[in-house]
Length: 107
Length: 120
Image (cartoon, rainbow over all chains, first blue to last red; front, side, top):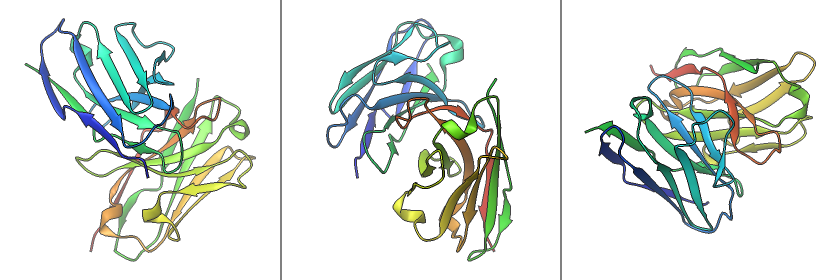
């Protein structure tokens, strides 16, 4: 199974900060990587697919990069609505697995 | 607009059974792989099962193989998850989700979730 590891687990930041979350795969997943945002009690929301493709309707301050085993999600200017937990997920092979999540908190 | 409505959750004793359902609307249900994804209280997301468009291919995470069965009824636009031999560690919020249009393996649309609690 491919293990996905995110860092950091928790991130404290202020509005308008630039934020970067890293996701590492235990073996190559090519570009088969998605990022989700989740708020408490809600379903996840797709932000990025194919490592760098912005899902329709997602603000352009979100961007993704990477391939193989190392990926990043960047929020260029953190907004109040962005305080949430973020998950990466690979879809290169079964089983589909997620990272453990990164909680973005208000500093 | 895509709409997925999860139902069927509840409290069940260890070793018991439960059947979850997901009612789909707003898209051509029979054209998409579908999934169940779960989240234990206070924990991260875990993929549970996938089923292909016609229902002939099923995939499961190892921890539920032999206990859970995913199925679909394309005539009724519905997705089910039959859960048998339930364990405490199956306690979670269960989401049905629509696999991306290219059937790549990520999820664009999600239900609201239905809570399963396994406890005596």
